[in-house]
Image (cartoon, rainbow, N blue to C red; front, side, top):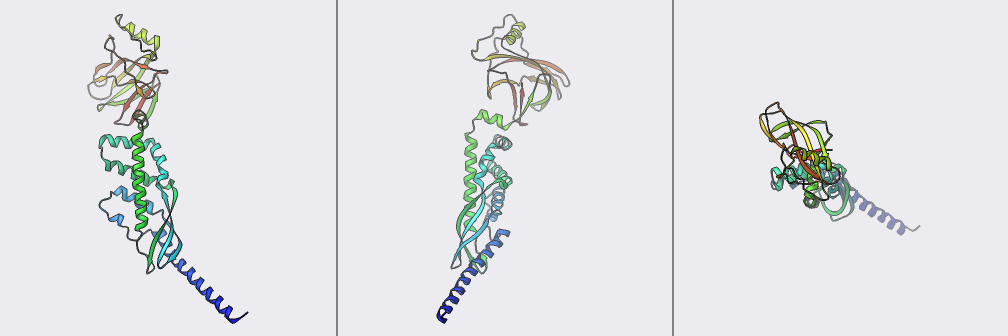
Length: 317
């Protein structure tokens, strides 16, 4: 083997070791960032961003991993992996508890900022369920430190803005009738069950005694008064129901709050020509009265009462 060949081989080895050392050094710096995720994150100091937004930003930054692909003149081409917030959209818009909070907040505050904060808070908690996203970006390393993680922060900020907009649009597209059923905790009761409802700040103990449909309902109405005429509603069936109301609060006027429904659509029934119905009554504190009323159904009857204050859908089957 010639001396010339040995020298050339040695030089190549030195050069390769030098190249490897440069990338290793850069990866060591990136590994430190992968642990601390700390440089000068301007996002924390921005007064224009809300606390919830910042928390989501920081939670996403905490999932960042940098892998050096190449180094040139102190500039590293890095593969960046972090939580893919877009993968949480389906979970968010399918969570009835979140939808309940979102629409209740929308009704009480109607604040875009408050709604965005709620979305950010939910995503911050759910971030552990996110898939992994990969992007390539340039990171400047000088004096053994990453000079700025702004490219990473900007990319994550764009993702957050995009996913918030997507969730807002998805919730806007939900049909109102479906939404009302989704956002309320459903409590189903049978005839004879006792349960408490709150109306205008007063609590009442309710117990359904009778529910009749079709010809049986018509007979109950006609028995109230021979002058009662039952209209024909074609494909819909008449529902007659009666329940007890015990006033657990102060003296009040109680009006029937239950309505008949079919596939989440409230069905109205004209009662002006019916006599003898007791769908409203004065109820003294501790007193029990009987309330009855009529409605319509399609298929199996369903009587509901929606209490948006407490977030409960009472359903009688």
